[in-house]
Length: 82
Image 1: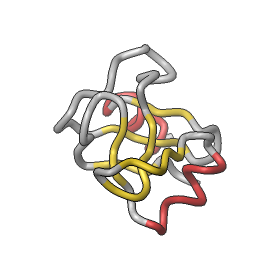
Image 2: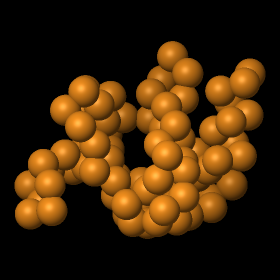
Image 3: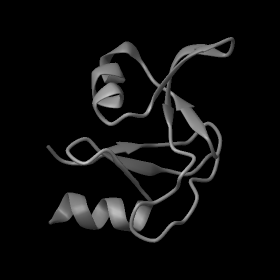
């Protein structure tokens, strides 16, 4: 499966996701629940798995559903195009 592009991170630590992405987030070990701001969140506080760049609020990022890795815009696009 190709990496999933998220148009805009909510914060540096997590982004709210819909129910359709919860299974992928669970498999990746990145699902966070029980917050008053919403029901389901994707945790990405560890940054890009390739370069370590932090996810920035308001900026795009990727999640590789096969590996569970979060990727910055550059590395996510590279992996998607490969």
